[in-house]
Image 1 (cartoon, rainbow, N blue to C red):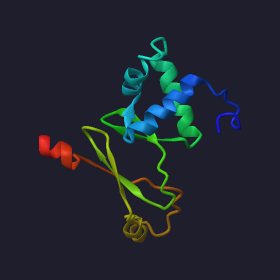
Image 2 (cartoon, rainbow, N blue to C red; image 1 turned 90 degrees about the vertical axis):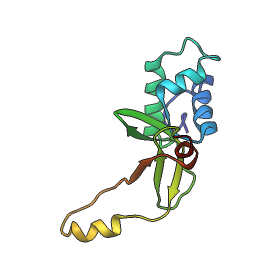
Image 3 (cartoon, one colour; image 1 turned 45 degrees about the vertical axis):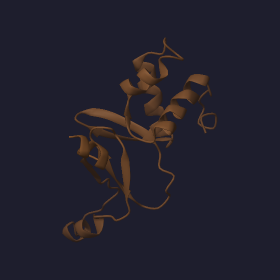
Length: 131
């Protein structure tokens, strides 16, 4: 996928994707930097962030924002339309198979909707039990 888009496939980029795939949750660029540092200590935060953003543009990763910080995760393999619950503490996600747009469409009569995004933030069962 990288080569088709004109990007070089490197061990560092491969490892970034593996880290996010293995995590199976949202991670910040700083968290990714901490996880990749043992193998690539010279890899800068800026380089990591640029690569993560490139992966978002290539539809390899998804991004969201929590408390002003961008978070990234491997794109869902579920090809059906769905949304997410995101744990604010650990970054884990749960798919929500219903869509609230059916309700909102009635309130936006005459508007042209191009896309939408619906995310619920809170604490997952494990984090809520620890709180």
